[in-house]
Amino acid sequence: MNNGKTGAVFLIGAGPGDPDLITVKGKLLLETCDVVVYDNLVPDELVVSLPYGREKYYVGKRAGKHCYSQEDINHLLLKLALEGKNVARLKGSDPLVFGRGGEEAKFLKKNGIKFEIVPGLTSGIAGPEYAGIPPTDRELSSFVLLVTGHKAREKEASNVPWDWVARAKGGTIAVYMGVTEINRIVSTLLESGMNPETPAAVIERATYPSQRILTASLKTLPSVVIENKIKPPALFVFGETIRLQPVVEWLSHKPLLGLRVMITRAADQSQDMYRNFRWLGAEVMTYPTIATVPFHDRAAWQSLREIRSGTKWLAFTSSSGVRNFIDQFTENFGDIRRLAEYRIAALGSGTARILSRYHLQPDFIPSRSVVSEFAAQLCDKVGGADSTVLRVRGELSDKTFERILSERKLPVLPLTVYRTLFTEWPDDFKDKLFEFPPSVIIFTSATTVDGILKNMSIDEFRQLAQQATVISMGQATAARLRQMGIKIALEPRGQSIQSLIDELSRHLKSER
Ligand code: SAH
Image: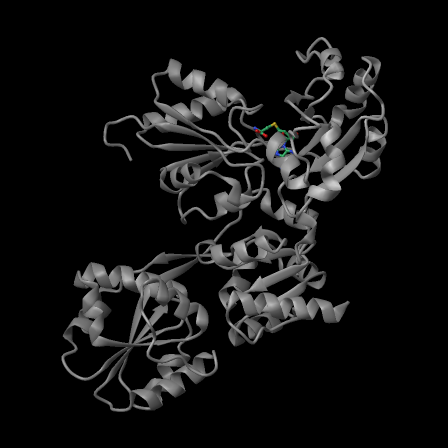
């Protein structure tokens, strides 16, 4: 925001992959800065979960397209700060460990721009720990070396004293950026006298549920890397503590390990879903096809003010409805206590859960989580025609509810509090999707289904869906999927994330 002042740049470490590994400070800054500039090793979820419309720049590598050079990045940071914006410069793992954050800091200092450094967990420490390899151990390892494998091929271009590294016994050595150089690294270490039987490990995609850990000896490591087609990002680890790995490893016990779950609903409503799946070991693929933004229906709020008599009911059918309503209610009426005049009806336990975050208890929840049932049962509950039901809705919500109430001659006032927009995925998202396709795809509304077609053709969608377990929540969602010829594997009966996960687990077991 340009108020004549210059902005500041925050060099933030995002952690190595698991989005929960960013620091509290990093996350707070990410959420509040005006603009985000991020690299390719930054976990997608951190960027996808930013509020809709946040200014952001991807400055990582992209195949066959224009890339930002370090100089371009420096100048972009400068330009944004001079525009008065606070910039979150988000980098993979730690910003200054093999991250070139130091160069950006120097450049900013030279140009008089304020900056702060927010450390992150470096992959060379966090990666082994997620793999069950302690970096230090009282008996086995008394130091840790973080080494770059970059340019190991051109001995003269590398500043690493490899012959010295080879003699560094009694510690743990983590080699970054070494995948293409592994043959050269290992032969240099062997030539310099390192024991060929030294325990070695490679950790690919560390801290993601899809991380792979392969153990070997120094001598056999290159063939293990080739046979298993290891791809970056990957780390090599050498040292005796690798022997502890079978005992210390902890990730492989997670029940949903191996599942790749694509979640299409709006990111700001999906945080619990992302986290629940991830904590159980699933790889969460954050592919929101829609986003919700507030919508202010001034005429409807005015009509609400003019209701003088009878009981007023609020009918909520979604968490976005609840959140936006509460925000707008307090903007309009100033004081949350004015809500005491209303009775509250909520469809589904997810909606009720969001209400409980505001310390509100619904007076009525229908026995089945279907809009038509909700409307019919609410009619019986509300009774007299002097009552008014406020239907809190999104712009695209269907009109079944209003229709049923009108048929029963009950006054209903639709109050639109949010709009749904289709989101366009960043450039590289679609390629990644087809390279590593999901094993489960979750749709939570008909609009999430429509939204997917803003990002791919119907044939591509069918191809993706054919190889996956498609989960559909809600009747309208299922209808839309069927219209498109998509086979639905599961329509969970419950509405909560827990029941979704339970039903999915049962379904997958029965398929085996
Ligand atoms: N600043 C980063 C390093 C960037 S250099 C840090 O502090 O870790 C890029 C290298 O980091 C990769 O080639 C790989 O060796 C390592 N790396 C980063 N993230 C990784 C991950 N999730 N799994 C394995 N290695 C990773």
